[in-house]
Length: 326
Image (cartoon, rainbow, N blue to C red; front, side, top):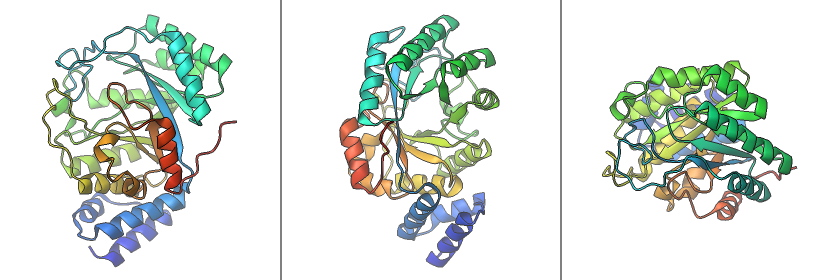
């Protein structure tokens, strides 16, 4: 595929067209990576402008997870060294929410390990959100597993704007890395949240051994679900997990994945997430390949970046605008 063909596809998407899977695979196989990445950035500029969306997460329940996800240090099936606690201290959660608000972060999410948060813990976490609401104007998200309609409704009532549940990979590849729950259970959770009027956030992890076609399939699945917030995690191999010795992805694979997600999901917030330390030497290039948002701060069990203030400084340096909280 030549530069002219890349430009034609980009123009078609900007004018309301969509990318096909065949075109996606052809784009990924073309040698004109510079043109491919520039086109992805132009799509981002057209649909999202230079506004950069930032959110943060807090590990609200850590470790002892019943699920056997091969990438995860919190799984009880794995042997990683990770903190184990039932629920985050309320005062700490409130303090972190207020700190993030002062930095200009828009939304704050409590994240729990496990297949699904218990009703008892959900009630406690909803009370934590209520306390934060009294002391802060920061928006709320949540990531608490495969919840029921009734549980999701409780979160909606407390003011959750977005519910997060990653697809993680393609439908084909997912059973290779998790056997204790299914792809369809994840999709049901997302659709249930949507039906309740809650925005959804869903993405995945790259570098687990999947093919580039698997990543394309995940991107199309997210498009079909109309996901508007797509976190892209890069596997940070953790000792004690089955994927702990995986070879890190190349710069080209990472940038090409970001670019193709932007082509397939032009209107979405394509979001830096976990594993950003894996591309610290070329983060600015990644910011100009389709990214327009980020999860800032530490990423549950691994350090996400150099700190929230430094993150925001780097995003602004790349030409993005981060609106102030009001």
